[in-house]
Image 1: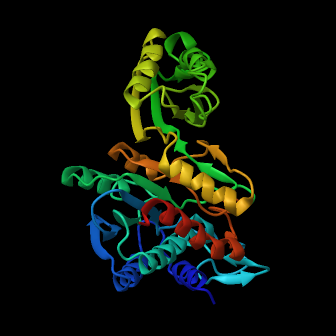
Image 2 (image 1 turned 45 degrees about the vertical axis):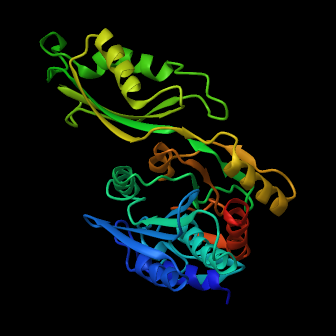
Length: 376
């Protein structure tokens, strides 16, 4: 059994449902220390974070990942126990197999191989792991990034091992992500009987024109490889459950995925101005998940393109689509960030899996990147 397959199986066998790390990082730290890395445990609240470094000075290259996973759902829905790794038909099954314990295992094996072959490499090679990527993402990389900012810890390049590939390993390279901003809008009215609308104020009726303007607005035309900014309503709730009662309050949950044309404060101000223009009596609560980031042409992006072109025989698609990742907290430190990992077809699903051939190829992909960027 290969080193990376053995390590991936060990990690999948640990039920590290966010924010519980279940010993994943301690196991990894032990391996990295034996390889010559210095390891620092950064625990905030219930969240474990591991910062492991080899070498000194710049450039600083960080391999970024998470050891936590989402809950598996009903165990009986799985063909096998989600926390007992099983190999079937060339696939490795288990919760976290694709998102992202395979990527973490490949990082560790690639790092071990790199420092063994290049003990006096240029700059600093680091691994940053958290157990709070799938949860609230408050005490994970967001908190670590704040600590780094206080320390003056710079990062030049960051490779995130999230499952970015579409149909085959390396066919897509993420070079940025949209920002994510969520809002909870509460529109206040006056409850009453549907037969006497003159004695009530229906917040649903009051809000509909404003909501129509919000969802029909063209926020921008996109930005380089970014799709246009999009506002999507995810939930609408009002009423008491009775058909003869005008509700007194309406709640609307929505999310904006936005390009570098915007930042969260400007979007919040735009939405508030539109609601004010409609004269609504409302409250608005925001949650800022992360600002957009984009990695321009440079050494990191060029190295990744070269490695993947050699692997695939053709250049990868370079994209900023998808959701968010913890790279959103590293990019503001001045780092160029890319995301490169396994196929994402089964992430968060029942019977999550990764191709064993892809898993065993991943350490070589990461090693090739490290050698292009840090080998003397």
